[in-house]
Image: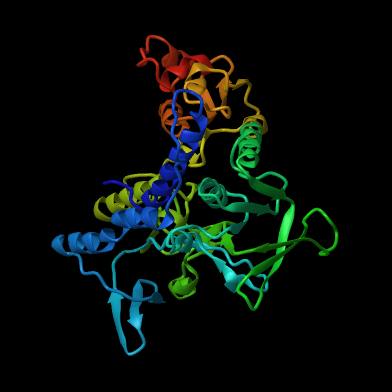
Length: 423
């Protein structure tokens, strides 16, 4: 099965990549009197060819398989009983097992004027031939960076306000710093240690974002920005608040439903959870949701015979260029007392970067001393989202640097053939 929920984002990313590529190749053999640009309405129309047919097609496939789809909010009214639907038109369902796969939702910003902030889903549905002239993104994670790179390539003035000292906190800080520099070069105003305190809306529809210095001891406003749109990029939380989990005796926390290695609730054996709804140890990523679904399906049918294993799970920020990561970062390996060596290099002068005019690229690979087992890999640059899969396989299978180097013959010249120089 193909993953579809990330496809809409990638449609926008590919358009931004095309803009970026045309700029990088200027004076390198490509000429033309008309500068390429994004017509937003056409791009969104193309994006909808991926999203609009999917809900009906998926529901039709359920019906053909003998599955009865019901629409409406659901909540527990017993340990294995769910009420589905709206008042006056609902059904009570009893199940031997119940799977919770409700995904995630944007976290509550808890600030005055948060009703003026749009979500990433709403960003993907913006109407008009062009994006607003100015956009502020709240938070410095995946969503903000990915959409900020798209918006900047579409000609929008972009600002990211991040509460912490370092954006993209789950990624290698050295490569993040390179990406931050590139982001600023394309016009993105990244401001760190900025805590958004309120968002005002004027009579003419303009928005004013007020932020304070997150490192200061007081909440005195230090930054005021006028903008046309504010986008929520400050993180997501499990979408489980309306389920009344207490009625079913299901233990949960801010990360989701507490589950064992079989993705079964630790407090109610009739309940399983998958994807973003589960506090399983897997990252909130599309492949994890699909993987969890397969684990749960097996365990519901065959009993608890499959355990979850998130070793070697890669993660990618689809900026231009992309930033990818798998396995341990340096501080994690040190905390575990592992002896390792690090190979780190800025690769902007490598052929694989120079031939596409990319000045922002690099890698960092962690290799265990003695065994030469791959502990972690972090890549920034063209096709990083593909090359990281090689390291993902290596980590999941316990492969060593020698396994990836000899006698492997990589197609050349490709970005994957660079792997041998990263070890």
